[in-house]
Image (cartoon, rainbow, N blue to C red; front, side):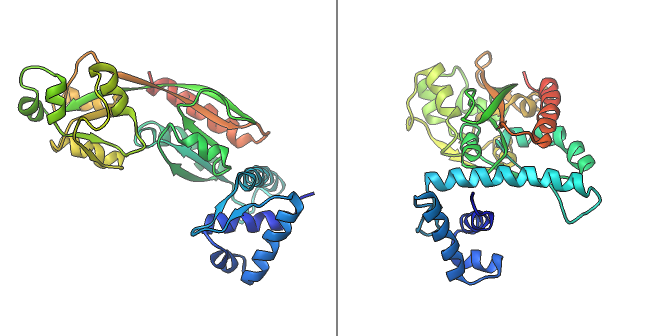
Length: 295
């Protein structure tokens, strides 16, 4: 059997980024923290921590952290059922989500559920093509992802598709695309992209205009709200989800740069295969709102 005090020490060492800070959280000495990690490593017969700055978990360490997070979720559910009126026993549900979903349909889907059950929501925001790694590493119990194939020990449920439109202000289009859209005009016009992780813009220009990375100019703005605001302010053109773009198109604030050329991105909800009601209830709420909001 694994010692869960040792697993908790491992979890805090990784989340805090080092043994010193973990010792302060646990209110024990640094040597005591190190001893717990050493005993756990001896128990499993493998190194669990990479002693870097900050420290990182090894592949086996990540597996143990995932197991510990699952146990925490189940114990939290059990504690609430045993003493539902005890405010000292909050249920924390950690979910990984992409910024575009968070900025539009995601929170409305969950707010009432979390208020009703008095759960605490902890969100980790990352690109939709990377959120499944957070689930795999045990940092989240569920994620909104573009990965269809379920991870080991997980289930994958289809939510719908986010449709992306290439948009800019009318003034920007008049300046950079007065006649037509071509590789030449796209090389000169500044684009707005979310981050280096986000490959949506790259895939879009590759598909429709046979362009390769590095052949266009781009602003990198890793904030969903500021990303959209930069386009509205005329800083550049960019790919915006239909839930944000369509109201602005109707008002004439933005126009489609490439009418008829849109990019659809399928989204899935992946979660652990454990009998925790939180993940079931969360999925049902997400599915209802996603059906109404996504394509």
